[in-house]
Length: 166
Image (tube, rainbow, N blue to C red; front, side):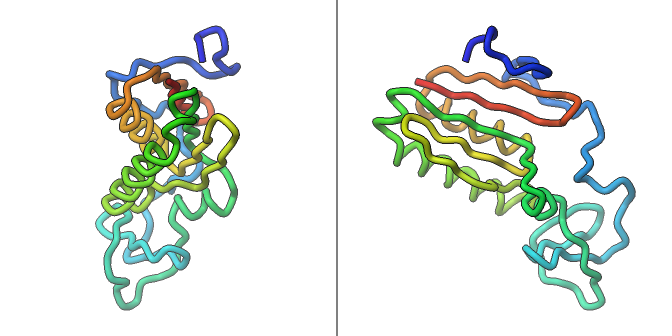
């Protein structure tokens, strides 16, 4: 993907800089949730101002977490496209790396999840619940296999598209 193929509304970002969200994310609570709370879908617990994996405390009320909310709405925050002849030849090992990285991130951060993987003939499209997970997946593949890595962020929609090819 070259700069001439950047989708409308997106802008390229440098991958050596931290991505700062510029707009309010509709999937993040506008006010602090009343504690304790837990997500009835994934069992993540909201405590001390953040979602984490923990035992559900007694008296906790049900509150869907932002990741489950995105999954239910089919509204990803990140899109990671992997493609190229090298990807096609090494698809299983690259996808294994992606799944390992996604699992590692999810164990530490309940809101960072892969929503789906769409396998195509010469590419794969991975959707995520978090822009930072999309970035981490792209960087993990780039670190392991080099190639071309591009990030395109749409500030109005808080959406990140990551494109890796080799």
